[in-house]
Amino acid sequence: MARAEAPPPAIRVSKLTKSYDDVLAVNRLSFSVAEGTTAALLGGNGAGKTTTISMILGLLLPTRGRVSVLGIDMLTHRYDALPRMNFSSPYVDLPKRLTARENLKVYAGLYGIGRAARRIGELAEELDLTAFMDRPSGTLSAGQRTRLALAKALLNEPDVLLLDEPTASLDPDTGDRIRTYLETYRDTRRATILLASHNMAEVERLCSRVMMMRAGRIVDQGSPAELIRRYGRANLEDVFLDIARNRHLADRHPDRKGPEQKGPEQKGRAA
Ligand SMILES: Nc1ncnc2c1ncn2[C@@H]1O[C@H](COP(=O)(O)OP(=O)(O)O)[C@@H](O)[C@H]1O
Ligand SMILES: [Mg+2]
Image (cartoon, rainbow, N blue to C red; front, side, top):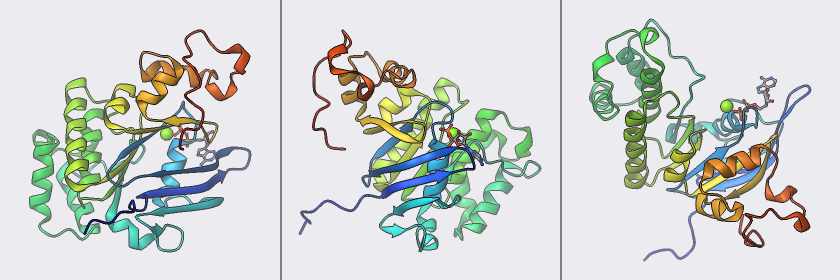
């Protein structure tokens, strides 16, 4: 019989905080991402997106707060969750002298993946890497390295994927194919994806939930359609600019409601 109650969120962060000496990079951040969905962290450079993703992965220790993934506490039971997670980031360099294939083999070994050669071959086809699989990673273009990093992230067929700018530096055609691949992957496996992206068209297409960050906090959130409607804008790019330029709704005085603003829909929205 189908269970009536909703499954626990695949990712839950609660009052997550990271402070460096003089910077509060992430400030009491709380949100959750439902299983099988894609959510985005958006925000200008320095908003705290990468720091948040690193703490969810357990690569960075929070100053305060909690993270759970697939119901597993990442501070106390991280190694139970890690086999079911993976990530890609343009900030992680794969060893440059190893070929793309060798890099993937090393990771497949680390993840304990059986029939690694076959899985690597499949991913090379699906992510269009075959032409450069045997070239040293250091000689690949930025777009090729991005695809290699995604292949690495998909090796262990993760249930939870954290993607930091997954399609940065991809040409529009390749970017589109990667987005289609990620959508299919999510929907066939009920995988959960949290991504940070500066590509608003990508976010509109992939994400049912968007969290707009500034200075380590969520300043607004909702589905792309909700945000667009609430801000009275034509697309998410314009909403992003409003928020980045400090014109987000929370800062607007009710008497000084902008002419394009459509009304009080923001009231009472579930977080
Ligand atoms: N290792 C670090 N030491 C000190 N400050 C850091 C460090 N890493 C990030 N920061 C600061 O934390 C803030 C958030 O950075 P980051 O999470 O990389 O933002 P984003 O990914 O949204 O661009 C920035 O002000 C950044 O300078
Ligand atoms: Mg970043």
